[in-house]
Amino acid sequence: MTDRYAVFGNPIAHSKSPLIHAEFARQTGQDLSYEAILAPLDGFSAAVRAFRAAGGRGANVTVPFKEQAYELADRRTARAEAAGAVNTLKFDGEVMLGDNTDGVGLVNDLTRNLGVALAGRRILLLGAGGAARGVILPLLDEAPAELFIANRTAAKAVDLAQRFRQAGKIEGGGFDALAGRRFDLVINATAASLAGDLPPLPDAVFAPDARAYDMMYGQDTPFMAFARARGARVADGLGMLVEQAAEAFYLWRGVRPDTASVIARLRAA
Ligand code: ATR
Image 1: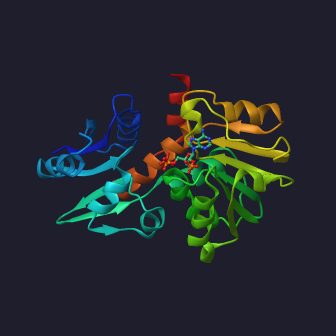
Image 2: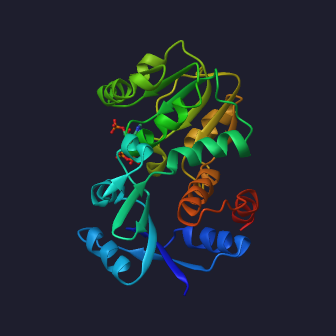
């Protein structure tokens, strides 16, 4: 029998996850199906339970349900606990396991696909919402020289840094705290790009040979244009999307798909 998986979100129509997982399954010879399910805004848990009752084996979870998925899970991995959010569910007999593969997806894209070393580097993370929180622990695990979280609402960045202070050299503040500081890698995890906005960065924020990464994909953002104009090498979040999917696929199936070919295919499309 074909094993069923799905991604739950709202909206969900434009999700690339079904295509990515179909490609992983074809590549690895795994017998599974993967569909996109639009959950009502007030009906996420019911939708997941119904899918599980109908034979579902696992699911991905996207906006705006990752915090609800965290609550729904019976057991959570350490990285899901740290993220405070779940993007991957595995239905293991009676147990619903919650994991978060977003952070490792970002780190794998940076280090394996883009050749960005993180150890000893100065990293600036923009934003202090769910997207930022999900990647902090995996970034600190790579032993950067420092991780600075800058946010429009400075107090949220300070709180977040405080929460992770045992895990590495981390600091938080407002954008004004960036004056006179330079970073080797700047990651945009704000929702500013969605509104066509640019976080208020100082001109000199990029060190020589710096890299810039926007977690958004599918369009050139004001952040990407700003970084490029100041000499940084720029990447969007498409690789992170594929890498987080690969990590979920591994959790479900115990097999690691090849991501580079899938990223290339999505870029060409
Ligand atoms: P997500 O789950 O995508 O992180 P979120 O939790 O709503 O969404 O967080 C959005 C993040 O983007 C926050 O860090 C927010 O800053 P505030 O905490 O000050 O609200 C940031 N953000 C949203 N719009 C922004 C803008 N136009 N410029 C700068 N930061 C912005």
